[in-house]
Image (cartoon, rainbow, N blue to C red; front, top):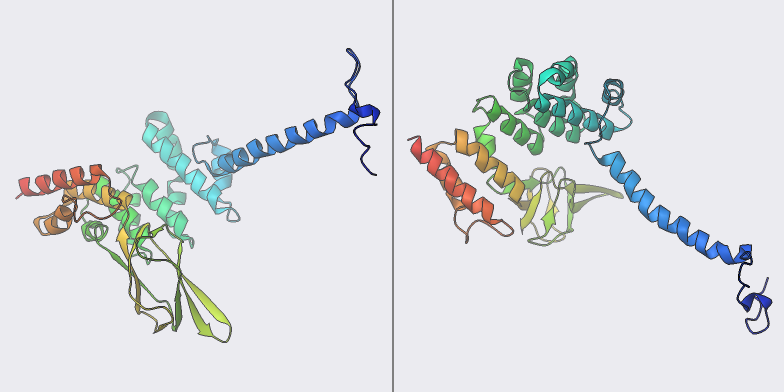
Amino acid sequence: MAKPDSATSPESKPPQSGAAPRPGRRRPSLLLLVITLLFVLIPFLFWRGTWYGRPLGDKKIEQYLADEAKPRHIQHALAQIAEGMVRGGRRQGEVKQWYPRVVATAQHKMTEIRVTAAWVMGQDNTSEEFHQALLRLLQDPEPLVRRNAALSLVRFGDVSGRAELVMMLRPYTVRSPRDGTLSTRLKEEDAVNPGTLLARLDAGKGQAFDIRSPLPGRVQSRLKKEGARVAAGDEVVLLSPGPDQVWEALRALYLVGRPEDLPDVERFAQPASAGAGMPDKILEQAALTAKAIRNRL
């Protein structure tokens, strides 16, 4: 239906005082209200579904731990168990019923869950089953899992992960998983997170494979030219470590570092060589860590 002309339509006249507004005049306002609510509600629901601080009852924790269809539910349950460990007292005793389940998640097929499990097991350094599971995780194929395990082991007074802690201060080499023609996606100094697409491999016959970052950090250098033919195991991208990884490694090495670790530590005590995007606290912690190592000589 055509819109009435505003000059002749009676709807263009203002309503008389006390007269009920016409239904047609309320629809735009109602639509605007619905849209506004959606803009508020959708982000809230997303946040609620991904925020691990939302309390879970014991039944819900049990349900979430078994929810293989929603891995974030498993992570949420693990985070709640960790909170119970930190809280201590009766709640710490209550969450011990799930310790075997936490150890089981350390062998989960999904990297993200193993990463979370390695962090959670570091929250109770009195559990020998956690200690042994963390030692096994030092052999995990994913660097982020190994690094979380190394950090957690420090809480047990165990220096078995020291070599991995030092590696957290060094650039990480990403290798090609298979043969193919390389197509890079990022340039040097681009920031990356776990899962960021670094490059794509054309393996021929319409097959393409992604090379994704296993760690947070920055692209330090691209080791192969665009369009290069690479073989499985070839070095493709060099990643510089991210600030959070460096910060945690330096704090751990403050406790377990050795004299041979000093060159890696002291590099971050110099503003010119610490790397792009490193906050001042990194330089300060590097100096403190170096001093602590020297004091142990």
